[in-house]
Length: 270
Image (cartoon, rainbow, N blue to C red; front, side, top):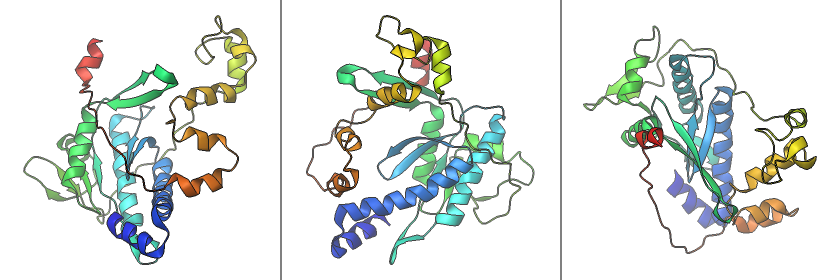
């Protein structure tokens, strides 16, 4: 799908900008399904995304069912979706389950990053590697939980290492979906906290909501540190649409991949 899309955009003269628009359109359709199912999109990583179903008042099994149900709906509605003329896109999905740690690192040069670490991510990545386009693949740990659910999901294929492909065409008893609740504070929260967990630091304690700044201003300051330096200038300009013409240009770059080797037991011992 992606290779064919890139070739089509090159022939049509739309180039990298056209590829970006098409992928964004496909992502938008997936995001709607994920959001309605209570998923929290942690990262967009190239042509992929990482989604978490965070802890709420529902059990782990219910949240796992929601995640799997969401994955099945994505395949039912968006597999071989036509994005540009004859160009179709598909996705493959891997699911893991368990405890995940989300850590925030950085601070140097006003740059921050957040990472998710834990065995469920490893499960999901391995499951995704087992899958082909149009499939929902789950880890052995996920299947042990799902198969105990009456009138639940059906396996279309089981691998020797325990990974299971879910039959996306088979009927199942759906669980009630729930949108993820916003955790953003409003301005009144800052006024009453007077320099507490929701207020800015670095201003001699910062009482009274960080010197009268609204929650939206404080939130903007914090979010900026997580935005790459190459992207931030475009977001701050009024001529955003014009800048987008150049934002997706093809460039020759050197890429360095760094694996910190973080594991959950290291974090728990810290």
